[in-house]
Image 1 (cartoon, rainbow, N blue to C red):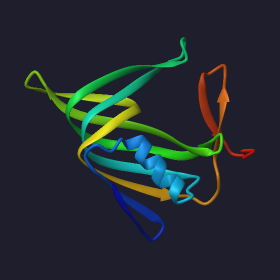
Image 2 (image 1 turned 90 degrees about the horizontal axis):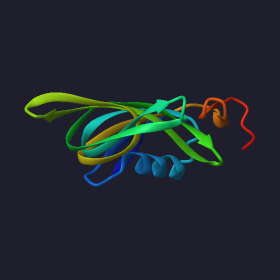
Image 3 (image 1 turned 60 degrees about the horizontal axis):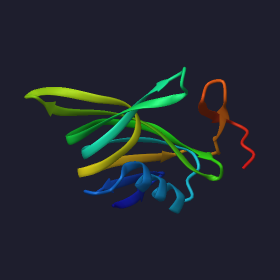
Length: 146
């Protein structure tokens, strides 16, 4: 992984073997980023996405291992319990049984197989997260105690 700052934005190149969430979290922590939008594209070897189930308050994961074109990575950086918290959704295209297929949802894990091209756009201010038990999710908190 390598990255550079140009103006207010960070351009991150992910390399084969880099896990997206862990690597971007490390960059955000190293640079002291607290709130940002994140967008990207790339190619992965494996990805796990989830779709949230309101009854069980958990994600139903689906994992695909193949050459995955990461058509879109979109999300944000906030803070939770003093650490960077990435909330990312992703759309992947891949070949399955000689047909094009898609994998999409809340990104739980993905490992780069070719490259990742990610742009992090910081914002002034801090948005935290707070857990809402009735929903089973962490929502934005505009008045974080951290």
